[in-house]
Image (cartoon, rainbow, N blue to C red; front, top):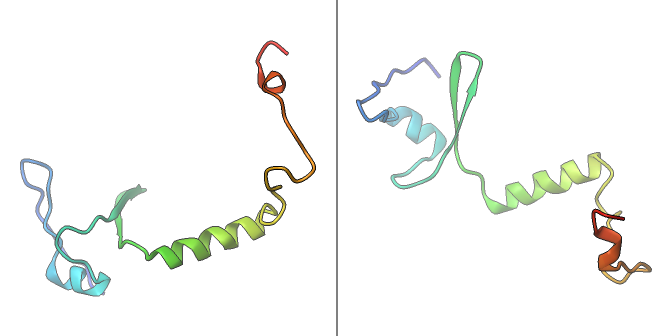
Length: 87
């Protein structure tokens, strides 16, 4: 995709070019993710809940936490005293 330009209003708003909105499947009222990378402003389209679940699952497996977190009552108990700062 070629570079596109937008003008910043006095309120700090920009209108995304129609070509960019179509390419990302964006519609009026949708939320987008905005971040600064170096000298660029990056706008990401929202992801579906299934995509987010898959990403979380993948990261958990890669970092060794998926399946290693015990379920409440799985062979351990804790008392409130164990978490107090003065212990």
